[in-house]
Image (tube, rainbow, N blue to C red; front, side, top):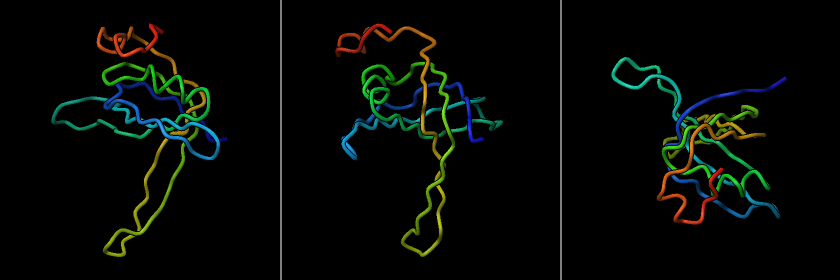
Length: 112
């Protein structure tokens, strides 16, 4: 079974796109320790459908969230011919651990 749960801070405002007759929203999550000792993980989160629509409005930069989902790898070749593997999480649930900022509310985001 492929399941993952991660808690972290949203590092960028979400990007919402139409894809395959659905909505996908992507944002980067930072989890773990900050500072010069390492231990920080940055990973992209993909939320599809209704969850993606909600994430587009609510997963604003700086919010603390818990994401449940499955780990996914995508591979491609870069310009130099090197194989690159990128890991992301396809979200099945996003829980918001804090209130949205005043800026986010003024942009139409619900107070979830």
